[in-house]
Amino acid sequence: MTATKKNIQLFVPTFRVDECLEEIRECLEKGWTGLGFKTLDLEERWKEYTGLPHAHYLNSATAGLRYAVKLLKQKHGWSDGDEIISTPITFVSTNHAILYEDMRVVFADVDHFGCLDPDSVEAAITPNTRAVMFVGLGGNTGQYDRIVQICRERGLQLILDAAHMAGTRLRGVTPGQEADAVVYSFQAVKNLPTADSGMVCFQDGDLDKLVRQLSWLGIDKDTFTRSQSGGVYKWYYDVPSLGFKDHGNSIMASMGLVQLRYLDQDNAYRRQLATWYEGALSGEVDFVPVAEGCESSRHLFQVRVPRRDEVLMALNGAGVFPGVHYRDNSEFTMYANQGKPCERARSFSDSVISLPMHLRLTRADVMFVCETLKQVLAVH
Ligand SMILES: *Cc1c(COP(=O)(O)O)cnc(C)c1O
Image (cartoon, rainbow, N blue to C red):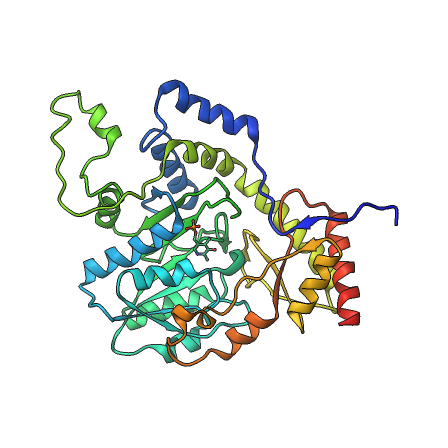
């Protein structure tokens, strides 16, 4: 063989290096790398971009999900052991957030989008159900509209884990306007990558105020506001509650600001890659569809294959390195006993592959992945 071996990875984040460094330079020159300055700027731009009423920048989406559960629990007076219906097909953060706050995770099954199935959600509701946690898998909105309707009808709170959904639109609008909390991840390999950070967007302005305090040790004013207040008695802040240290910083926010400028353009290229994949695989390989009316961020492009583990190993042998999103969380020791097994989730978990999806891929790369996959499937 003369050709060098392929090396096509699942995720390779792209950064506009000079623009990122320019934003970071402003922080370094100003001497302000922490909370405030760029974090406030990013929050303002995120609200403008999404149309959501509030946004607080944190060091991760995991923290955001935990605050969503904590503050909704506090506001509504939920008890320990009350239930939140969630999906077994997600990154463990989603479900850990529920357990951190001493609530119970009740799994409902997924649909053909790999998102929570509304009928299964309805069937899982008990007198102790307080909320639904919906994950837009890969940027897909799945049957989100019906989930919103169920939550309204049944008086349940709705948390949208939008870790994959930066830039997703549903009929032209950012989904989550109806949710009680929406949480985004800007982790290193998400479709809006920084290094580590996230955004929590509460519907209720009081909860937005609270999360600002709680993510900064419970202190009731942020550094920026205090320095603006004329310098009189700056040291007289109050600490009304036992907070944590989870707020975002200006270096990460600098990267986020640059990424946000390119988000729509980048997602359009992801959708182009997905269209190439679909064209090449159509009729031969099952792929996970995108819901009607959803303009997906296309964080993921997923296919479903028999004998997945063998297929994945064979792809690796050919220099293609896909991923699995996700293994059924009920297979993990932590989540082994969260109600009835979810059959469709189990079969999704056993068959799904996320094909390489990032901005450095070319049409030729996509074609190579598809041809390799088809060859592998023909012999496995
Ligand atoms: C990545 C991810 C998270 C956690 O995001 P972090 O910013 O890494 O904490 C939560 N939910 C889903 C679905 C994710 O993919």
